[in-house]
Image (cartoon, rainbow, N blue to C red; front, side):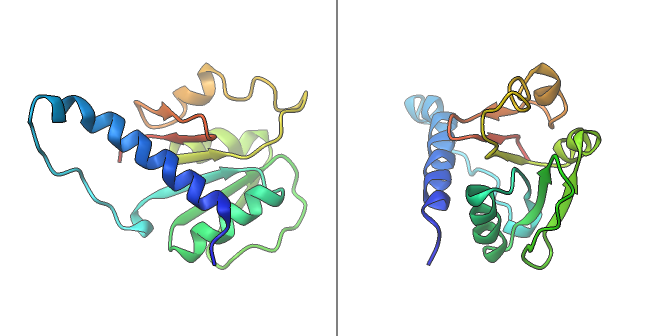
Length: 139
């Protein structure tokens, strides 16, 4: 059974795809969108609290390449293949290598302002932001 958060993220991702194709639908233009396998789509999850850990577990079961980022180096029990990086110096390098960034950090004084212009500039361009906390960049 999958965690409910995965279905919320899938719904948001589908909404993003629909928003991209809607203008073409109005013009009666139909093109096939690129399809990537799960293992071809690198994802970074920010935060490994209860929600972040559940998200990482569910996405790892689906075969995605996951990097999990936290500020601290606290040891974590993560699924096989999930890479855990930590510290402020590790944030921007993992953003550069991600097609999807899922922000599951709590809003605290330490995280306020984290998603700023530098954050989005570090992602493959152009990124698009989803209110669910996921940021998608085209493959």
